[in-house]
Structure formats: structure tokens, C-alpha cells
Image (cartoon, rainbow, N blue to C red; front, side):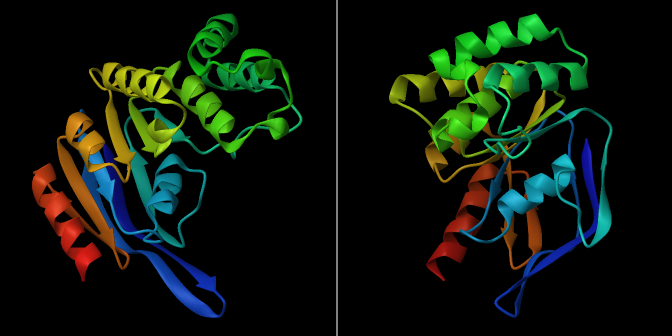
Length: 218
């Protein structure tokens, strides 16, 4: 379970305030797979980072009763001068998992080849997302935060990524950001729409998508 309590966040962009969250109170139930919908710039990635604890809100708090992943697809937590393997081992030690086992999983899953042993700063954005996704999927989180990562790579890798995510969601929760409504319909059962700093929850994914489509057409 993840609960947002009076969560607020705003940025100053060229002298104008842009609100990401305005006193949001909401609960993401345990065992749920939730599509987080919103137009570009609505603040979906920022909300995921606040849930993960990698970004502080201006006020309010996030409460969780389980282990929450960082936003998968966001490589900001990795050290640029360390190799992919070194970053993987570092994360394994932080979360108390077997370093060799996690490295073996990421080597097989992320398909980085020799780059796995090269500095993270040399990676393309797609390679960074593959590493972040592989490391996250190799750890048993209670809730996975996923930000567009299943759009990375060729068709075979995207299919493998979705299959792995679906397997993890059999025993874990997930909050998923994606522009692919087909993907969201395959892996999510409910939805939440972020618009102008307000979050609207829907038990029905179809109703959430309909709300999102109305916002996009307005």
C-alpha cells in the first residue's frame, strides 16, 4: 500500500509556477497495477520520484508499508564513473541481495554486452533504461514504479521486458506510466489521471483512459 497525504509540489519555470501536485491525498492499494495517466508535462515522472523518495515534495508525505523501487527507466541513481556491473553490485549491497546473482540476472536480461563493464556515463539513454530495468526487475520489490521503460529497444526486447514486468506483478504492485494505451490495458487493472496538480482515481482503467482522452482533446 502506498498513501499520498496532502502531497504538494510546484516548480518555477521562467518565472511562472507549474504545479505538479496540489494537496493530493490518495491510496494505491496493495496488489494493484495502476496506470498513471496525464498529458506531457503534467508531472507524472515527478510524482513517481516523490513516491520513490528520490524527490522531496514541498509539503505532505508519502507513506508505504513495503519496499518501493526507484522509477524504472530513470538512471539518475547510478554513478557515471562506475561500470554497469559496479553500479549493479552497489545497488545489490544497498538492498541486501546477492551481488553475483543480481549481476548474472542483469547480464542476461539487459543485453548490454561489453558495455556492462564500461562506465555508465558512456551509455545511451536506451542502455541506461535497460540497466535500470534489469537491476530493478532483479530485486523483489513490493511495488514497481515504471516510467515508459517498456518502449526501449527492439520489438523482441520490449516483449521480453513486458513479460518480465507481468511476471513480477503476479506477486507485487505497480504504478505504470506509458503513452501506449494497449500496453496499459494489458498490464493494468485500474488508473489515476494527473491534471493541473490533481489526481483522480478510477477503479476502472477504461474510465481513467476516457478521462485522459477528454483532457487530451480539450
